[in-house]
Structure formats: C-alpha cells, structure tokens
Image 1: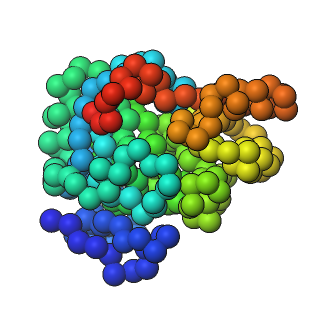
Image 2 (image 1 turned 45 degrees about the vertical axis):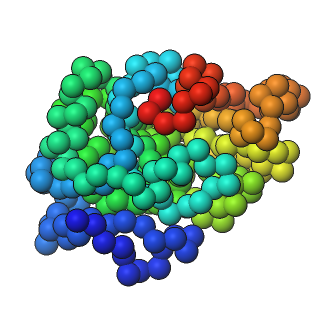
Length: 253
C-alpha cells in the first residue's frame, strides 16, 4: 500500500513514498543494503522487453521496468499514463518478471523512478543478480543513493519543458564516467540553454555521453543537427529509436 508524503513535493506535485520505507532505514543511520529487504514493494506501471531506444545503449535488447509516479509535468511528456496507474509489486516479483526475458540489460524508468524511495534497493538487487542496470531520471531528485555500478541517464530540463527550475544541479558532481546527461530540446532557446549548461558539467563525462534530443513534435531532427554542426558542439545527437521502429505504438515499446 502506498501513501502520499505530507511534505511539500518538488514542483508542487505530490510524489509516492512506500509506507514500508521507514522499516528499511537502519537505525545506525546508514543506507539500507540492497538485497536485505526482499519484501519491499514498488508501484509498477509496466515491465516489458524491447529495443533500447535511447542512451548509449540504443539498439540493444533491454528489459524495461517502468515505475509509477512523477513529480514533474513536462509539456512534451510521452509517458503520462505512468503518472498514477500501476500495480503494487514486491522487488522479488519484479526480479522474477525480469528473469523471464533472459536479457542482461535492464532499464529502470518512469514516470520518475526516484519518486519511490525503494527504487535504489531495486537497482541494487538487479545489479547483485548480475544485470547491467540503467536508471533514467528527470534530474530533480538526489542521486547519491544510487549504486555507482548503475548507469545513470540524468535529464537536465530545458525551459520549454516548463520544469527547468526543478533541476537539482547538486547531482552533477555525483556523476561518473559511466553516466550520461540528456537535454530534450524543443526550440532555439532550449538549445542555447543546453549549450551554456555544457560549461558546468563535470569533466569526468566523455563528450559522447552528452545527449541532445529533439522534441519530435516541435523541432526537426535536421534543424538540431545543423545547429550542432554550426557550433561544432562536442555532443551526441540523440533520437528515440523506438519511435522510428514502432511509430504507431505509444507504450510497451
């Protein structure tokens, strides 16, 4: 069973917290160890097997664990169906479902997966089971609790999202060479914002880990490509590959 937090939520939106979260926090003040709390539950929107459409792993088969809930309301969001709908599922059950696909790559996504406090435990359990794990996060939550073996894909929200004020820039020093930063760009203002933000990103990030992705409904892929070439930016043009493969499918791919 889940409940809404009584504390003010980021962006003015309530976000989900597992009612059993406090049982997982050790009295010593240390972080809960992944693997110890196998009965922890998460609200899961869907688990499915597809081609990884984004990130440096684009093109690889991948199991997606989409969790329910998001504290942001980006104007271009394509997963609004994950805001509320979901099934309460134990971490043990999630691992059983993932195992059925016999795939080494798993992405934990949303919604915003970190809006559920037990998500770091799920990630740790997946890693300990031998999976290569990716976390896609909107960048508004602290990522310090995420196992460093996990590849984090951290969004930095641009102005056209309507949520750029929620960027948690304190996450930047926590990024490692394994991680990626993604900018979803809807217009020239977004592009200039992203270009300026490149200057403050940690040097540990390789330039090909910096992803510029167009909002398909408002910015042509060709236009963004030309801007990047004109400015000779050391970034990677990033597309949602799954939308080219299955343009008629809005979920589960």
